[in-house]
Length: 415
Figure 1: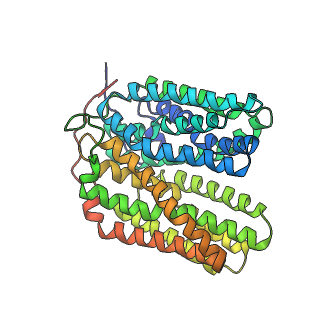
Figure 2 (figure 1 turned 135 degrees about the horizontal axis):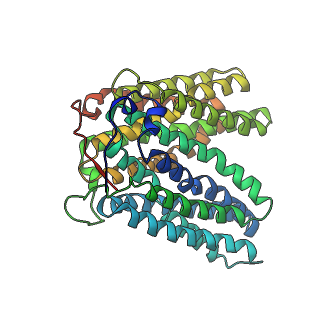
Figure 3 (figure 1 turned 60 degrees about the vertical axis):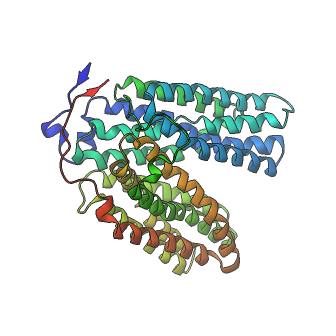
């Protein structure tokens, strides 16, 4: 069956109302919210499981195992999405992920689980996290009108921010009842979310990767535009985490650890507000120009944080910078879809999260050293330098990274 793409007033105007007027979009985004819930739950659940079964060192081991498996598997799952139908990839990964979370949940009910059991569950959970994000981002240009694409990507970024707010609340609420409930709930949410996304009828095969289905090739990394975008992301995305280190240093300096939670909760709310606002209208300039401007905004806010005379001015600077986080993430996704080689869209999107993880691994230890030796200003200035460099790189390459100006022909979307 073919569903014609809506035209006319329902498909014009960069607003969420027009976006959700496109048939299937509401169900697709609802499923995405559920499918991404493990992202906000599993990490904290592993920390608590480690504390329960072996202390802080075991917590670090479990989270590290999960993160390492996730970093390795994500591009491979993206490549699988480019080669096979989304239903096959999402369905199989969701089934394995539910099994892994069930294994982790069972560790709570065993008085003394074998040390290898939680580690195996963490590795399996990281390697099988359903690639709902790249599946959604790769399919949006197939049925969302061009003038609504930035709004569509912003909606995805806002949902992801909401997951990071809802997830810890679920862990805190369900975990007080029973430790196994948060991972079990995350598994149920992932399975239900994948089912709802597939039921939307919008996730067809994202494309056939040229050159066969070989997993061990460089894929989109051979494209110069993709490498330039990923370099910009490698600089900008870790800056977001570096600011968290700076806030932690502010809280420690004041002897008030509760400040960390207060400021970061406000930052999450500011990011959500910024994403909702940015998606309601069209902004001047191409997506690369807008992304460069937002990176510059974030750099300026981080520099203000370094100059702040006290904890609350520093917190205000963090909130100011957080306003552009969700919009910037949406723009990076929009650019990734525009520069991705034919048949490599899903994998290109996965590399954004991979370079973020790599960048954090490289910059967070440095941020901690700077915060310890120079106080919060050192970490804030590192974040400003990273974001400012990313903005300069994106601005310099904005013409190469910009989507083609010619409108794409509209075709029926296969469901």
